[in-house]
Image 1 (cartoon, rainbow, N blue to C red):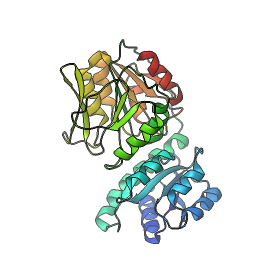
Image 2: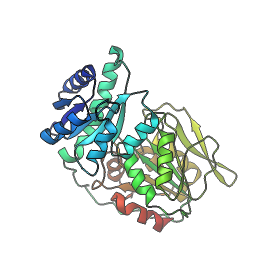
Image 3: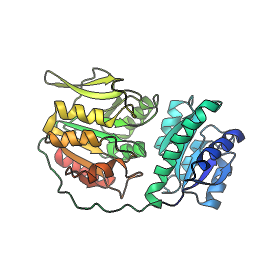
Image 4: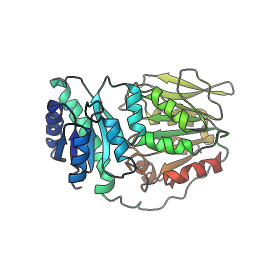
Length: 337
């Protein structure tokens, strides 16, 4: 794969130097420029045409939100927010809604012991963000016949990089009187899910809320897993109930696999599992469980994915998942529910 070309935008000279050095050290990323504020950053973007931008949100001269507004509607560059961990969660959620595809939290002082940790995460996310237009997606070896299940009692959705925008587009296209509840897992730092759930609620005809332990699911309600905690589904009598927990420890908290596995166990063949844009393979094990229980699967096609990683894993596993571009997915969900 070609090296992604990256511009670093941050009003701290120290942060610009450190972040650029960490990405260069991977020997997989080219830093083509840095910028001291949003206005300088837009000029660098126009002149250098980078694939990816890392963006601080809190800058005195044209902040990160203003940059994102200027870049809205553009396929490139992909923007990854790299901002201090104490950033207001509403601002972070707004950045995701405006087009940032991911968040990386940096400690206020960029302490030495955290540098390698931040670097590994940042490099992985930059490479994933650029992969869709630097590495052409290879076609599947064979086209799998979609498995169309019967009645759907629960819709489960898993997503990661690019997920906030994908969820906004999907949820806003679904009707208020959807005859099944929705449970969603998004890989996002803890603290941002409440604000994001409020934004999704405003954008959707459905009721959208951050998941709470013991919350009863009902048609017309969509719940978003709380950052840092798994969301599982239990059956209490005839009701489906949300359960939150910290175990088992997984690479992703919450885990798409944990949600899908629980849905397969308690809802079985009446589960619809949906895997949207994201890097990695979280959701594959759970998708296998849903398929084994007789449920049905849908994936976002490579044509609309920001990162065709999680959906690719499910598509290539031969589980009978039906693949659709994001803008066609709501129509297909309505057909099944």
